[in-house]
Length: 153
Image (cartoon, helix red, strand yellow):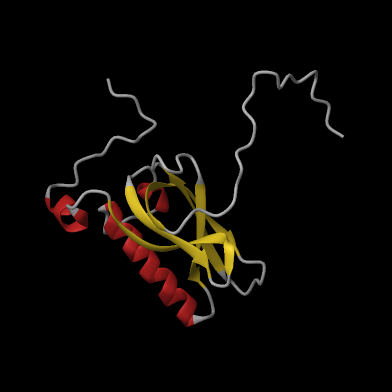
């Protein structure tokens, strides 16, 4: 039991109906990322990525993916590296020390369904929001981008 001290939901927002997003390209950004030790142990770990959709069709919805970057299965690592490489190119950052450097950068993500499960989404691709891409942004000196949550002065 949890004492809520008279919590009042009178004017509060209620939950939105969930369900999987329709397949297609959505404007989004990496909102959170965290290294998680796999339950299987053996030194296996992954990066849990949470993307926030900023596209008006599904604004605020979330989609997740895991990058199995530390895994005893070499194929799982290769797949995760390709996904991370694609994300980094879409963000315009080809070298990073921490996944947090990719947070808040507007990109396009291709959303599909999990294999055999239309109730769950899967990310199938990334591309830059603008046509410039990673190379032109890196060559232009990597100008600092403002984060969506930062207010301009």
